[in-house]
Length: 418
Length: 215
Image (cartoon, rainbow over all chains, first blue to last red; front, top):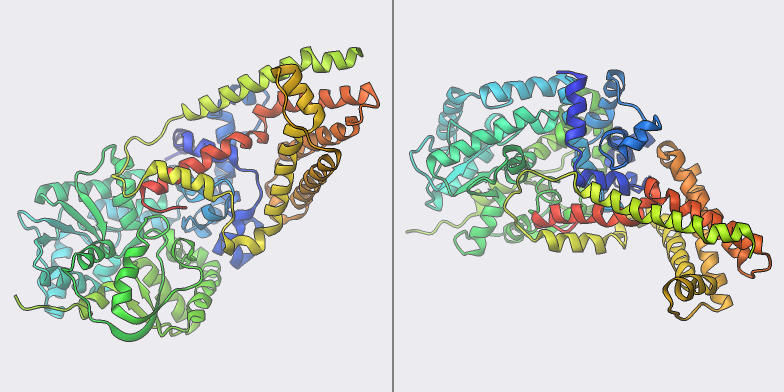
């Protein structure tokens, strides 16, 4: 890992799309209004536009069609290690790559995509936050960022099977559906894992977990380590091909869904040969087809749109289709859908001690949003958002009545006798 | 004809216009040739539809951002619309572009229309620049080129207004010299956003259109 590799990464990743962003930006600063971290800190350095200035300099010197002219005129300079170290706060602590700033930008600039490239360079320079880097390394080695190797996976599935009285098939020879889950569900939110299995079993679907590829979360996308990101999605593709799955089901994990659904093709260099669906997307499809019937409960609940499932993933309406049949009084936050505020913990931010203060301050926006609905609770469809809500609500002593979408579906699905 | 005016409207103008045309073409072609992703995921929606949607949608700010963006947006529209109206319909411009260069003519702005358009353009540009030098984020992120682009455009507009009555040949020559400088510098400057905003919005729209979401 070196500055040379970082530089190579910055240069090679600046293609036509990124160049058009850098050339279109007029430095108006309107993106700042959309950023929860800037709103929380009020620090101008935290404005999204500040996060890609390093790419702009590199672009001018190396990729701009007029780059030879700029070099001749001695314009700009390449970044040094100290400068990159200082960037950590902007790139890792105060950006969850939620993409909300794109909506506020008159030029439609996708700052999150540029932050991902800067993270790639930072990781190549060995400057990713150590806690994320350790987890990413562990994921590459063991298959999961929390060290859940195939043997540990078997133990967890056995435990969940016994505790929740549900069958969790592992390593079937052939299956139509390959189910993935995240480390957070395997370790913390096991009722969600059990709920997914219950739903698939009750619907009589042919599905399996695979020891070859089971982890949805992709820490490579947090650190910017492309090798890790690629290795994680490659495992899933191999596992799906091995069992002959036509569908890969991504769990309630925002970035996990994004990595296999939207990033895998670019990482691997080919389009994965199967359908990839977020669990809420899959359930909504079954619901629409009449195969999944739900019993509505008298409750008032709101929904937190996970950024990487909704705004950056395209799954906005599907969870709502389910929720309208799950609760009698579904209340939208304001704003919601693609305009929703991030939970404040995405992109690995909630895992960073250095980001804790600004993350908690940003979470206040989310608290206000939920409270303004007057609903009894808030529904989650992303384990990482769930974890951010849990840890932040605990800090503030806030009882927000968290519910989980998949668990609600499992509890309220109507099981008809065969 | 005054030698200065002859130079500014003749050889210098054609040189600047050539640099402008070739520079813009070089920049945009080079930008597109920088390449894209190695492979694309299976679409959930239409990339082309997404590109068109985002290009059009970002002309109007989303309501939730208006409290903070309102003045900026108003000033931006006032400046750009005012400038385009002046550029296309001020009588001397119609005479210069239309009758002299293209050999055609079209209706021109009445005097009061010119004044209104110019007031909008000046007010917009001055407000935008005032924000650039006073708002903390813009102060921090603005480059010398951003200020230079504003000032050069301002001087082009100001000299154009002074030359309107055609009272002095030297005022017209000054205006044309500034226009030449503006055209010459355009492809190398932040003024290129005039063209690249379409690419920027288009790429984002196509990316998220593919994902089935209109941003």
